[in-house]
Amino acid sequence: MKRFALFVLGVLAVSTSALAQAPGGRGAPPPPPPPLAPGASQADVDKALLAAPANLKDQATVIKWKPDFTYDTLRQGTNRLVCFDRSGFPQQQPFSIECTSTANLGRVAQNLKAEALNDKAKTQEVLDAAEKDGSRVKPEYGSVWYHVMGADKDHTRAHMTVALPGATTQSTGLADNPRQGGVWIMNAGTTTAHLMVPASRAGPFGPAGSGGLRGCP
Image (tube, rainbow, N blue to C red; front, side, top):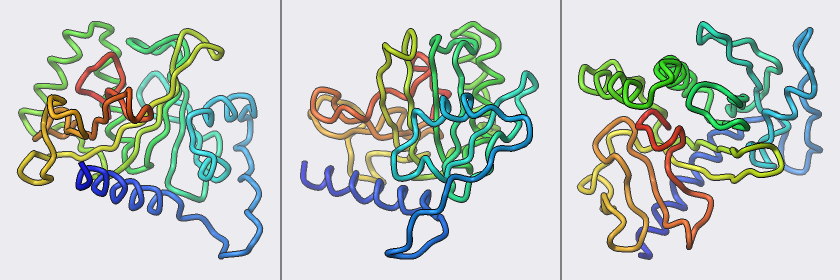
């Protein structure tokens, strides 16, 4: 269990450090949030930042996805965290916000395209086929995915996953199932492999969103 905890803490430390590449040195006052893009709504930006960690949100990039799975940038940030609203998207809850590394936007676009089929079984078939033929976009190893979701803004739950694409029991020393009661790898050996922690103990970690599809992270 101690090794499990150290592994998780190490991954999170590296991930947070990588995301927080913002200007300013020690002791310097934090820079103000970046300006919004012309025509962008402050309300849209504020909503998308609800899933962002407090120490990263002021300098995070905020985007808005378009029907063709490209996006408009509402606010260009200075760190590597990007946040967006997925509320009401196919196979998403009525209120759904996500933040992750900017390196994962290709993965997110692929997820959204598959989910647009609006059929979980068909979406899973598409993602499984991409996994098999090598076209599945890999998430950044060690990157964090932050989620806030629920029926509405007043009834939400927050959780977080850490992407470890390709990770296995052999490569990490972690179990690939929850039977031992500790940290384990879900979807081991695939691009969707990610850390899981029993919810009753750890809270912030959880299933990889989208109704358990192997599309997230």
